[in-house]
Length: 494
Image 1 (tube, rainbow, N blue to C red):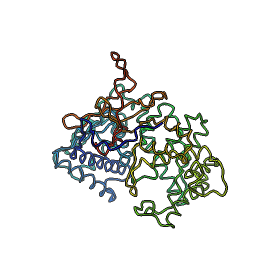
Image 2 (image 1 turned 60 degrees about the vertical axis):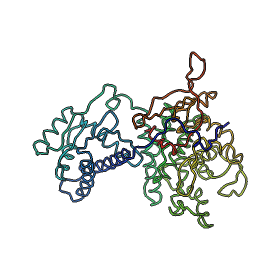
Image 3 (image 1 turned 120 degrees about the horizontal axis):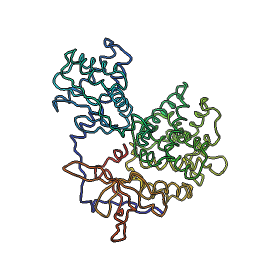
Image 4 (image 1 turned 180 degrees about the horizontal axis):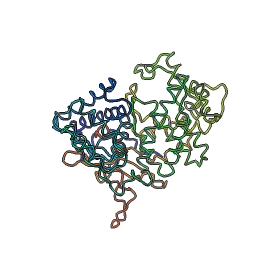
């Protein structure tokens, strides 16, 4: 069922080679660092007064980055356009580490109706403090806020900061109406990583944990999948090494919920399945990081610890009183997620039994995400279509029916695959075709190179026909390795 296990493609490169602008990348990283520091500074201004010593270090860190921009570009402009932030004309690509800060800064500027501030000339700590405190003290929703803030800065003789009002577009959904599903998906995804981290950390310390928050996250994921499952499936392309365990648990839950929906599970069962995905690897939190990330071969004691983590996870789950009455399906699902379809794997079973549905679903989701995620101890990371091909060839590892369901969800070229089309165009698969007969004809975001810069879009449907020739306009020629073409897959889903 899975074709085109990609071979080495160096001999047939596409006509357009996508190069990286390293200077642009550096500015983008600094921009994200600045947003993180501004987030902390803005939050701190709501807690401390300007004379508080704890504030000085936060201000200094922000000022160092601001002055770096001023030295290289002579000015620094932070601008809001709809739901994006731009620094000196460059749109910031939000990442896992900067998402919380990004959303806070963006939402505060939108609420305060401040669309842009420009810094030039000299800026010291006192000026920066005054600016942030006056900004955060503005009333929400007042269209005259930018004018008021500028007048305050002029009175304080702070001439190096200019403020502009927020440009409001009638169709912006931020100021009314239903939330954009894509924005809702990103918010849900990153907040869930934080919630799982909070839960696992709390359990380790025998502290109260936010189990209710986790339940809300699962419900949010289910609701979003009903609207458009491709949004959350696209976000599973995010692979954050620093937060691997928590990121991985979110991805596994998303894949599992997608399978559960295709199987027609009830809302209650989907809730339990999502929670199982979130919690399936919590037993690993008891294993030292130096063992989890060990590059060399594990010794017998270390391997024993690894194999114990499903049982450890079960013990930890049973301690979560806030979850209420624990469903046996959840507990057994966590226990079984490293057992193969033929009952090999671990933990060792005293007697043979049939694996539960939850165990078989989590097993597929867990292995696929693990295979497609870079790890420090593994030289090779498999591309999506490679991982599926290997899983299909493993006759003993997975429930064959569920694996077909999974492939039907992801497609032969799964969401996040970089592909070369027969038109010599390059693109990223962002949505599968729900019709099984078009499993090899997903929707693709085209990528091109113009004037030394990468251009993203438009999106094309590979079922689109050429009327004159009565044939498809585009076909996938083969899958490509994103690393070879310097393509960051994640940026197409953020």
